[in-house]
Image (cartoon, rainbow, N blue to C red; front, top):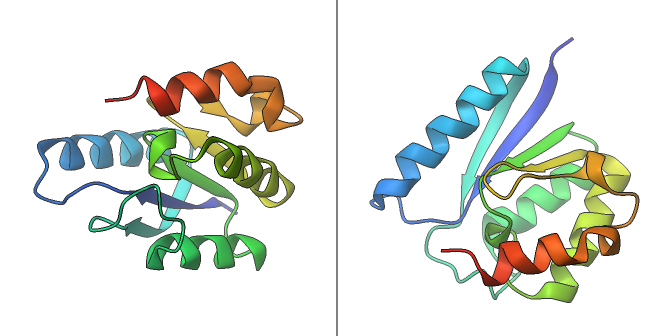
Length: 128
């Protein structure tokens, strides 16, 4: 059985990075035998706000064990509030594997997200 994955982005569809990042994530999924079951993009919402429609749907699907892996290109798409992002990373790890491709962050790299605090800080605050 293939691993079921969701791609999550938070970037304007018209942004040139959108197509590039989506293609990179799809290529990663194909290479790693991950079946992408959904692609979510909260393009009109600030990552400071966690009450985003697709993000809430994503978290719900994770908590209902409908997915094995979450792929995103940048950690800042999850959110830009450091403590909330660290809490979400810890929560996600209980259910799924998490990968932020461009930031090179994987849930395989930590037991508790505070172990990679510096890496998360860099991803959130030095990101373009």
